[in-house]
View (cartoon, rainbow, N blue to C red):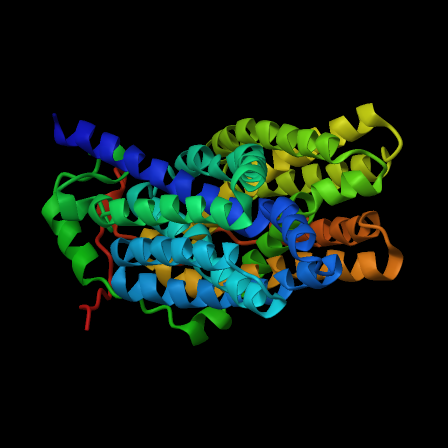
Length: 436
């Protein structure tokens, strides 16, 4: 097999792993809440509002996970972090399923969010940007299908497993699967294609001197400190923009079934709507990737924000119309398929593959801090008004702000560029510092 073909095959093989990480992150930390929270409440007689509210502090612990794992990726690389996060997530699943008290549940759900955010919000983008620096949008368009796939498959599978084996048995099964994936990733993951003598993007154009690129990758140390990142306008604009768009995604998906029940529909109908959104999202994931590749991440994000605004308006205006609800759900599903692509793609666009991990320490943390507000927003709104729909009004406002930020965002590369990566480049990276 030629090096070019091997580069292509191995790189896309790793995108399968990225898709699986998206799948288990979305399933365990977002979509599964539709089933797991009611299941725990029914099994132990706990208060629904109390258990649901614990997802908010758990989300903040997940934010700490983003900070920690972003730092660890920057120091140790994806090859070290991915197995650690996956195996930790699997162990957390065992503890979560065994929770027999509210206190134990609180600890367990925090552990689940901590580890899943590590691989779902950090490693997915970091690994993709290293292997597909130029075609990241296209690559993420396929691998981010893992998120809507979780909506389509994880929830019904979890429901069946809980019905057959109970909560403990169901999450033990998921725990074993995730741990096995973590063990496999020890032998599967490589930080960069260059360390294997392979080419990024599966393309050897502009990479005649592969050894030089390998040396640069091995010795490069980013000079983007946390302080410098926090002082950068581009960091804040893109972080708030995508944080608000991600908040909308969590807000729409995380409690879609309870919303359907609140509107007078059955749980079965809610599950059908959630699955419909997921199926549409799978197609949407690919299409958003193609749009990103065709017109760029910034323009794609502007279209994305407008699309979400219209989708929410349709959902709010169709509460008594099943056809209108279906249209709104499909539009929301189309949006669900895009966020896992666009946010890491913009981070790679502005900071490049070499500074991605360093920048993600701050960008992903801010995005995560905003995203986790979704659970609290819905919880507070429901407790005050008794309606999830009232929270959707805040989602519209958030998307309008995101739209404005996307328009003013400067998406030019501000990270270091190793010019040997690009066919039309002739210069090498400057100020490369050896790893301490």
